[in-house]
Amino acid sequence: MYDVIISGGGPTGMMLAAELRLHGVDVLVVERDDRPSDAVRSLGLHPRSIEILDQRGLLDRFLAEGTPYPGTSGHFAGIVPPRPIQLDTAHDYILGLPQPITDQLLTERAIELGVELRRGCELVGLDQDEDGVTVELADGARLRSRWLVGCDGGRSTVRKALGIGFPGEPAQTEWILGEIQVTLPADEVASIAEEVRKTHRGFGIGPVSDGYFRAVAPAAAPADERSAAPTIEEFRARLEHHAGTDFGAHSPRWLSRFTDATRLAERYRDGRVLIAGDAAHVHPPLGGQGLNLGIQDASNLGWKLAAEVSGWAPDGLLDSYGSERRPVAADVLTLTRAQSVLLSPDPGPQAVRRLFSELMRFDDVARFLGERIASTGIRYDVGGSDGAEDPGSLLGLRLRDLQLDDGRRLYDLLHEGRGLLLDQTGASAVSGWEDRVDRVAATSPELPTPTMLLRPDGHVVWSADGGESLEPVLRRWFGEPASR
Image 1: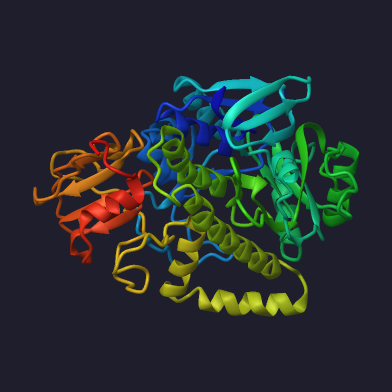
Image 2 (image 1 turned 60 degrees about the vertical axis):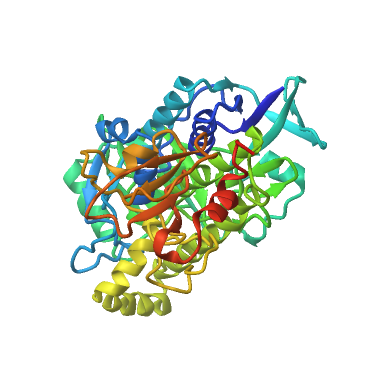
């Protein structure tokens, strides 16, 4: 019997698998496709996802493959603030990185940690009881695990098998996206694209690499069969319709569809089965938050599920995954819906867009929207007497990376995925919780309070000036002390 089976080997599934393996959990990932996809559905990582990679010591691998774009965090529906905003993060940039590379790096990390990955292995059914979950595969094999997590995309087999509702709006608009070669000169392609985008902001084409161009164009209507890949003939027709030319498109490297369907799962857990990533939420790709949202789901869920497997999870810890992450997804859906409206060529939405462009001149407005897309302003309800009702409180917020006086950085101390007590006073201790929480006598003029307790995902759950003693908080988040 496995501890955890994960259905889906995309970025959410592999990030979650790696998080679980940090705590010694026995993990199997089953992935339907027999080879990694080469479709570039995501182009980069946002600041909070970059922070999560840094917290696990992975960021250098990603920086070596990507391109940082500073000052790009404040864009909203293609509206650029008149001046760059400053987010409260040491990573105030978007990291340009094609999704296949992100997938590859996360997969490599998971396998390094001992995750078992089976490709060409599709989950088709499940049955759970008090002790675990039986998984049925397409080849008739049956596997047993203590827990199952569905990271299997918007048409999730796991979610459907559980009967979890997926309410929202069906697709009204579809786009075709792909990487193609063209016969027109690059300068002519750029000139045509610039003119078309004056009235069709859902259209775009530009060079990527190896002589290929990345292009996107609205389809005639949502396809009846979402699994059917578009053809180059269909893509040429849509390019011709919007631009008056098909650019001589040929030799596609890959073609794909996406829609503006917007849905949110009614719950994230059913007994011993959970869902994460696109299995729990789908939305248009405006703002580029989909892949990032999945990585952040995995960061929140991983240590909590590992605690449940290990036997020390306090009551309610695993359920806090859904109560924390579902509202975040709902907020992302709100943002993408708003951006969809602002991109409409109709007169009403264009009037709202002009108003938004004026509002973005105010730094507070631009920073507010930037934090929402970057996910750096998320505050979880972690309890305590100085919680979210006090805007100056740190409780529930993630702590940005800081330089410590001993030469290390704060995020260096989170690489193992454990809790962290930062103590500049020497007056606090974690006796009984040493197997789950590290105590570091770190000093830094940048630390906002003398002593604070961080969860493995970097969110603050206690500070010495908060009015609550430390031991109840350790019990709330890290269970009973081992010595008792």
